[in-house]
Length: 317
Image (cartoon, rainbow, N blue to C red; front, side, top):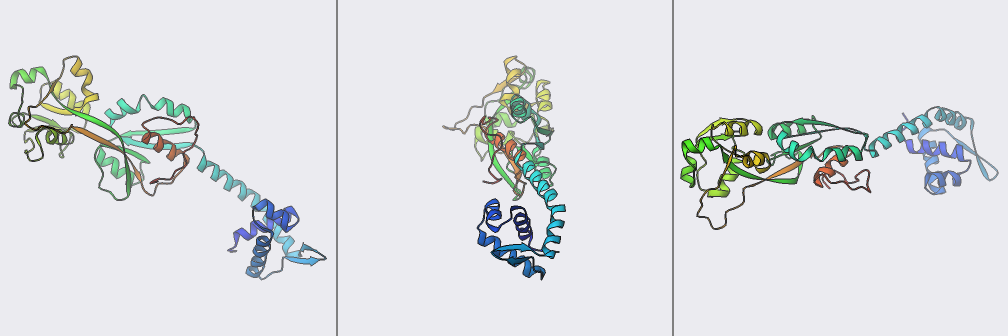
């Protein structure tokens, strides 16, 4: 198989343009470079492609036969390359995005119409899942982008902060009437808790912000359930205390179905119980225009640059 594909393109352009200079102008190189490529092609093939006729170069019979064969294939190849290049540049096709349902409902849903209107040929495949599975699916290539609440310990992923959520401890009025309203760390430790998972996501950062890192985490976790809506429902049913994002429980607190619990703490400047949400993607992700459009839109907080149709930065820039 011929190895010098660039020289074949040059030969094709010379046959169409008529002279080295004209072909060089079309290719954006010098006439000298055209001549060097053609000589290299002749050496590679062991065939003379041009002969001198006065001051001009003319194709030999072998050169003419080769150009004819190139004419059968190169235009189609050129069109295919242009089509592939356009597909890479255009915001067109599917991007898969995974993350937690409550955050997507609160943050993603109101922003999605603007994105899809801005890029009418973009298609999103949105999947709801817990952070640990989102990270695995990113690494396995099942997702293009993910939203995670904990930094994944995966060197193959790139992560950037996208949003913050404030955590609140809540309980139902019925539960507090029965078990009392906790104030101190000792009080809270005696209560029943509903937690997201074994790592006590949300509960652990809230606890450490309220009572400090040395205070032992509560032991009475009566239910672990990896669904924030179900956690809220159980808290409203009086099963126990739950620590949840403020945007999720805002309505329930306003309507009196839940009560916000504020611990008494001797700490002068307690840290605010905030959690960071991260956009994650594979470091080796192909930088297609559709991927970059969605990734950069997420990193911009769901805002769109109306003057720009396709972001041009690469993953990890």
